[in-house]
Image 1 (tube, helix red, strand yellow):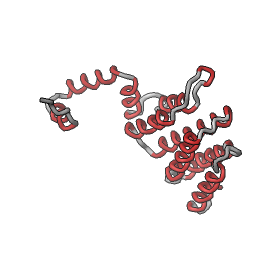
Image 2: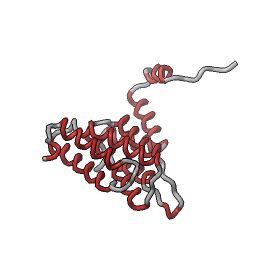
Image 3: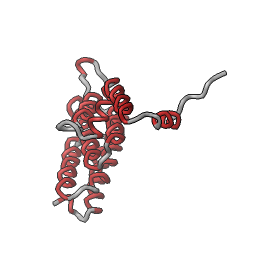
Image 4: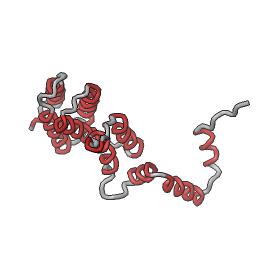
Length: 185
């Protein structure tokens, strides 16, 4: 006879029985259990100088691996950093920053090492496309600075092949038009 797996509903019912001191003790235990929990709590409460730094470090490791140590890139692990940030905080400015950082790191790795794996470039293109609508929700100066970084990323991608530059040109012009040209100013 197999028992059913506990669910969030079961956990929530148990949490209702814990007083505030017990809850703090429980969170302290989770905080010490692993690095991801610490990062989540630091981000959630805006602790530290740069809450994006741990997410960027993770993305850099997986998008720009040390090829001299035979490390391989992992788009999935890099994307997971963005997912984790979204769960912890998820504000548009932070999301846009991480998405653009993803694009910049992917583009630089490809430019530096000639890494033209089709799946890797597809991930770069999908993230570039996902970043633009988020960027366009931001206020003027922030939007313009991030849009400019996407243009520089496109410039890095010249001559990658697979239609990368053409697709980026199309997307940038589409969003510049949708914005009434404000992002070009």
